[in-house]
Image 1 (cartoon, helix red, strand yellow):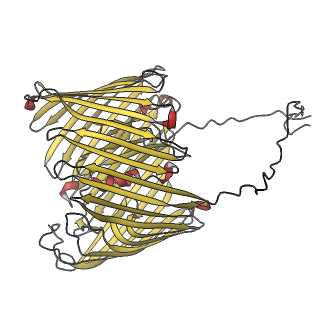
Image 2: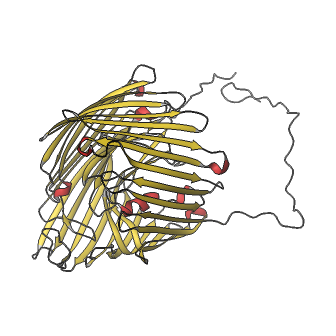
Image 3: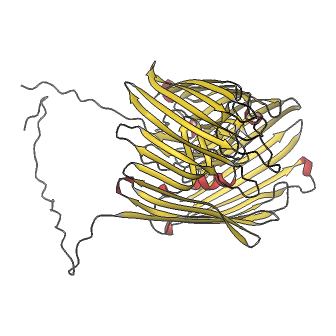
Length: 595
C-alpha cells in the first residue's frame, strides 16, 4: 500500500500471534463489573513534648468516584493530661464541577498570593466549562488551643478566570466584622477596637511581550481603629517563562490603613512590596545565572525585609562536576539588623546516584563575622543501601561549633519496606562540659504491604541545647498517596515550617534525592516522596530554590526553580511545589514526493 509522501506499507503475518481468548463466566458467577469508587483512609498520631507530653492525632477517610467526584471527612485533635479534645472537623465533597467544604475549611484562595486560613464555616466552588470558576465562603475563626478566639466574621464571593477576549478577569467582594479584642488577647496595633468593613478586588491578566501581565486593584472601607477609613492598593506583575529561563517582576503600592484580610487578625498591609526573579540558562543548560530580590516596607514589622540574592552555577564541560557561587544581603525590620552572606560551592554527581558537594560561606553581621562549611554526601553502598553524611563546621575567629549528621537508608525486599536511621553528633565551645553529644537520633520505618497502602513509623530522640526527650509517631494510609495530606498535618502543628515538594510533571509523583535550599544557606535532600522540610523558619519573606545541579542530566525544572514563600506567625505556609520533566524531543519526518 502506497501512502502520500512516497512511503509504502507491507503487512507481514506473524506465525506466533494468538488471539486473546474471550472471557467467560466461571462457576456460574458473572464477570467483574467496572470500578465504582476508591475508598481511602488515613490515621496518624504523634507523641511529643518535654515536660507536658501531648499526643496529636488525625483521622481522615472518604471515597472517590469517576470524574474526580468524591467525598472526604477529616478530624484532628489532641490528647493531653488524660483529656482528649477535638480541634478541627471538616467534610469535603465534589460532584460534576461543584465542590463544597463544611467545617474547618483548610484554605480559601482569593487571588495570586492571597489566601484566608483557619476558617470555621462553609466554602463553595462552581467550575465552568470555559475554565472560569465562582466561589462563595463565610465563617468565623477556628479556635486554637491555649489562645482566646477573636470575635471575627468574614464572608465573600469571588469569580476567577472569566474570559474577555485574550484576557482573564477576576473579581472578589469580601465583608468582615470584628468585635473588640478582649484584654487577655494582645491586639494588633491599629486594630484594637471593633468594627466592620468591606473589600472589593479586581484582577486582570493578558499576554504581553512574550509573557503574561497581571494587574490588580483593591479598595477597602472599614471602621476598625475607631474611625472610618478608606484605603486602596494597586499592583502589577509581569512573568515570562520559557525553556531557557524565567523573568518575573512584581510591584505593589498601598495606602495607609489597608488591612490584610484574615480571621485571626487584621494586620496592616505593607506600604511597598516589590519582588523580582531572574533566572537564565546558558550553554544548553550547563550554566545558569539568577538574581532575586524582595523589598517590603511598612505594615507588620515581622514581614518587613530587604532581601537580595544573586549568583550562578555551571557544569564543568560535559563532566559530572559542578560549581557555583551566591551573594546575598538581608535586612529585617523586626531586628533592624543587616546580614551579608557570600558562599561558593562545588560537587560531583555520579551515574549511579552518588552526590558529593561542599559549601563554604562567610557571614557578615553588625556584631562580627563568621565562616561556615557544610557538606552533603549521598552514596549507594550495596544493593538498596544508601549512606548520607552531612558535616558542618562554624568559625568565629576560632572553631565554635561542629556537627555531623549521618543517615543510612535500607530498602527491604518484603512489603516495599524502607528503614532509615539518622544520628546527629555535635559539639559547641559554649557547652564544653558536655563535649561531643548526641543531638538527634531517629529511626524510621516505611512499609507498603499492598500497592495502595502506606505505613510510616518513627522514633526521634532530641537533646539539642536542652533536656533530652523522645517523640514518636505512626501513620497508616490506605489507597494511593494522592489522598495524603502530610503538608497540612505538619503545617498545622508548626507555622514556622516550610514544606517543599518536587514532583514530576504529568503523574505528580515525588522525586527523591533532589537538593533544595532555603535562602541559599540551608540545604535538604527530598525523601522518597519528593518532600523536604525546613523547621523553625523566622517570619518574613524567604527564597526557596531547587539546586538544579542535583537533577539527573535528562531532567530540568518546569518554570522557575526559585520561589518566594512568606512565613507569618500563626499562619501555615503553603507548600512550595516544583515540577521537573525531561525536555520534549520533537522529530519531523520529511518524506519525498510520490510518483
